[in-house]
Image (cartoon, rainbow, N blue to C red):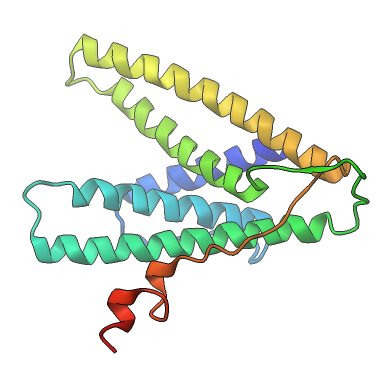
Length: 201
């Protein structure tokens, strides 16, 4: 099984599990061994699923402003958790390929493996929800046809992204490419770097 296939299998499993309750406060029951790559993948998709639905909720035009602010803060925290987990997954690959002899003409990719995995997780959620739209019975034929066409594009995108991810990992494994992990220095989350925060101290 290619690594991208493994990712899709775990992401689809987590997406399906989330939608059993379909509630942003549902407890995650991660079936994989702690600190295994499958554990991280499952958790990654669960975080994405919760945030997907928080983004839906906050767009309710009748939402109470106080509730909206609380959800916005929750989304901010979710984004930080997501970023931290992406960096953790990249560290897994750095360790896995630490003994690879990098070729003299090796190049670095614009995107690390974990950020490609991040996009794949979200893509699996898009596919799930677009399939739900196609299956709806209370919509027009035009809506169904439009969603079916979008689903076709998403499935093609999934195929391309999986191919690119597997190629990237193979290139790193053989030394044709090398990778680095750059910590995401989100200044707005840091009380020492956000002037709105440190200006009030």
